[in-house]
Amino acid sequence: MTITDQIYQYLPQLSEAESLDVLQFLKLLESRKKSLPPQSSVKGFMTAQELLASDLVGLWADREDLTDSLTYARQLREQAQRRDLG
Image (cartoon, rainbow, N blue to C red; front, top):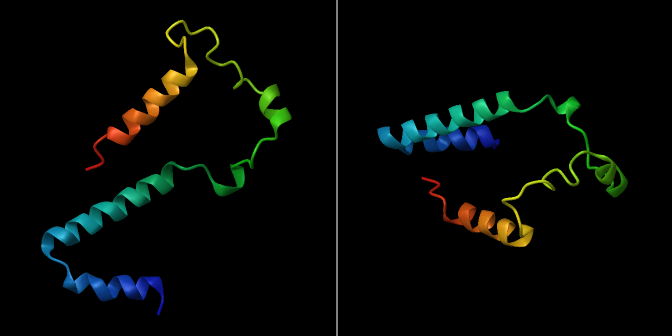
């Protein structure tokens, strides 16, 4: 049985509200897929040498509001963990 068959098997068991949730989720997946670059244009991982040669290293070096990068990163992680996903 394929995954599609398994999904079809569950659909009749859903309430109207649950069916709408599934539809919204499918639309979300579709919109994400449209916003991603084509698979062929996605570059692989960067080597350490490529990363150092890129503009990423030192990108925020002149920011005066980021005096302690470790504290800033910790705050970002905590905010991400507290955000409402519903």
